[in-house]
Image 1 (cartoon, rainbow, N blue to C red):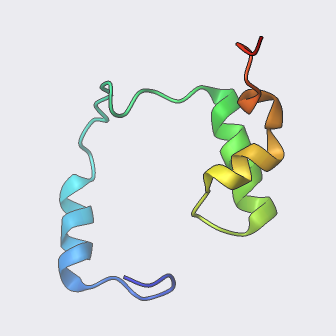
Image 2: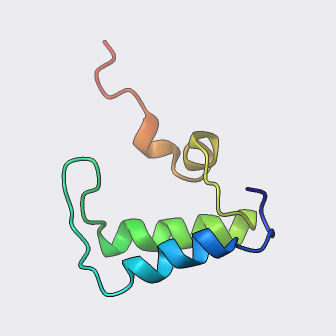
Length: 71
């Protein structure tokens, strides 16, 4: 699927079937903190994309990627 392409009838049906189901969090999909959610929204708006890369995170939040166990 390419960005901007309309959904197919099958995709629309799949989304409709999921409406009303509860969100289930697990180790692969933990709940997101409000702070993390705001950071993601910031990156989406700044880079005008829905696809956030590790490079974007490193550029915007370099303090998180410093090696604290050096020396």
